[in-house]
Length: 352
Ligand code: IPM
Ligand code: MN
Image (tube, rainbow, N blue to C red; front, side, top):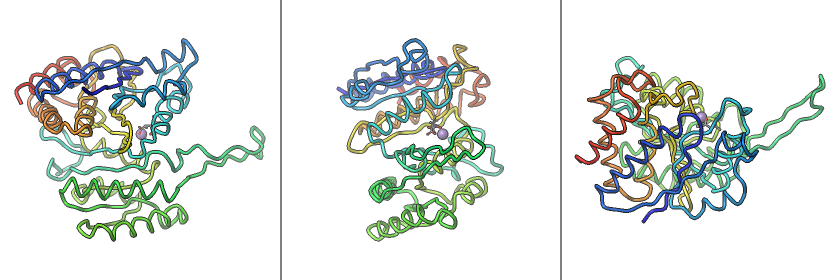
């Protein structure tokens, strides 16, 4: 019996989470396992009502679950940063979810913005470091508010943090067993401290994985290659900030935010799965948002929990919906409502 914490969150979060939970129920029934969900109202509405983002006790409470399923965090009436830091990043850091795993896979039937590229060309995974770098939150102001103001935002890279991320990427690449190629994405030519550490660590760990081919790309260049030659990539490992940026680009080449999911992974602890798009306030409550990204997050969660058959059923169902049923992945242009897409996924999960 898996214990799943569900945080629907803000905007369209609750709508897509509802469909994700439907898919989870169907997959559990088909694959023969049990789970129990506990819902939490963390998010913008609660913050506006109570002034609370996520308390330390609430964070501790999340440790007793097998996994967390998150919808979206972000509210138009709350200053940017408060909910992101107070909820999303607090969970990522607090539960030491040191990997942000973001598959970039173009499914058949999905419109790709890249000319002459198809599903055979776009199938890679970005392993983003998830607890350090520019996200660490160190730095500060000097002479704030004066003409001589200084703002410093530091990138924190620890040997331990870098090494565990790189090791995860090598292991993941081996387990994935596709091209067995791992690309380090950095900026060794300018950020000569951080990327020196990354590169040295990468090369040292690589020596333990003779079966994995290695490569390196600067972050600016990788943006170019993702568009020009996405077929070159199998697994890409990078830091927190670069990973944030390149995975939005990745989401676009796999068809958009409507299908992009990610896992915040602590291999030794509690992991959290989420659609990577935001709370989409403008589509909220209209039953037009695409739930497939949230459903793909459920697929990743099942895979992480070791429920391979259930995960595969969910992925096949998503692929069928993409091929047969929806006109586009974009909100309002699917030709189906949010709940209709969820119903179709459920039907296909049951069919196998
Ligand atoms: C993401 C998001 C977050 C990030 C924000 C909402 C803090 O953009 O999950 O990629 O920057 O990591
Ligand atoms: Mn992002």
